Image 1 (cartoon, rainbow, N blue to C red):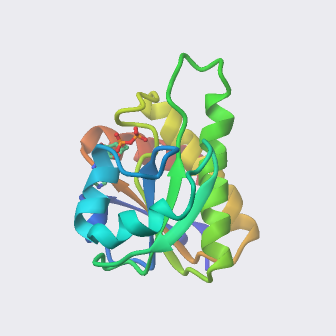
Image 2 (tube, rainbow, N blue to C red):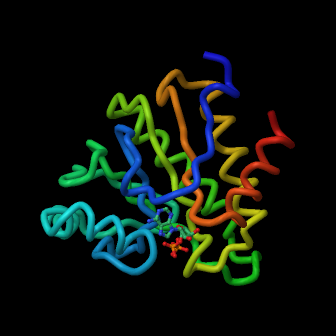
Length: 173
Ligand code: ADP
């Protein structure tokens, strides 16, 4: 499949998206939080927290997989993004690793369709344009050398994120 056909943008709520796996912008405890993490735990139900408790956390930049429980998605891939601290604490590389490790976990579980929120762009304060450029660059590079996942959707919560993704995609496709 041609690369541009494999990436799309959607404005809305990631808990409602019909894909095999959704990515959660979690924190390193994996025990729930605010933002998209809270929305995912509310929609998936308490069984998700019970499974997360067995995982022993997730270092920043890494990813862990659980079931999707009451979500349409079969899997949730939890990744802990970096907290923005000015950009000289390794934030760009850590954010890039979130995308690479989440995609690698999806491939390992034969996931064909995956949706990402804008990791670190909420409570963690990452500058949106920079974060969207990293998300697009890492995803396109990964898809270039991997057949799975076939499709990646960037779910944008609000028009600022949507516009930033569109600009990043236009610049790189
Ligand atoms: P982080 O702590 O990594 O910054 P947040 O959950 O605060 O995580 O924010 C990450 C992104 O997810 C932000 O762009 C935020 O607007 C977005 N977001 C929040 N709720 C949802 C949701 N239900 N679906 C998709 N994106 C969401």
